[in-house]
Amino acid sequence: MVLFRQIFFQINNRSQKRCSKGIQFNYKKTRCLSSLNAFDQFVFNYGFELRNGSRHSSFGAVQMIQDIFKKIPVELKRFFRADSAYANMDIYNALLILQVSFAIALTEISYMPLLEKYGDNINIGFKRNSRLRT
Picture (spheres, one colour):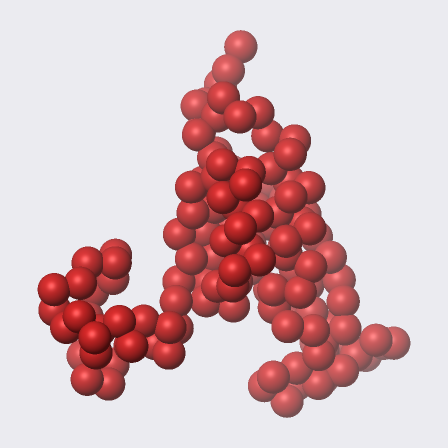
């Protein structure tokens, strides 16, 4: 019996301020450990990895994504979302191969060249923000 027909996953990185071995400075110059976490829409944890603080947020994400979605039946509609730290081709390709629909935030650097080239005639799923450079 199928209780739901779709599943949503979110992956993120958290800094864990601690006093122990493995602590290194992260990009904010904070001494910490870093954790990679993956949750579904019911807030069940599907993946957790604790690593030193100097690791990039997306380090290890491709393997975690593959491990998670290989266990989820293809019959379910599978969705994935993440912030701009996970906007890279390795993650895109892993999700496409696994037939997962996804939404990943992009940094201004990623889409500003498209705006400059195509102007307001482009529709790639974002709203122009007054905070952005034009």
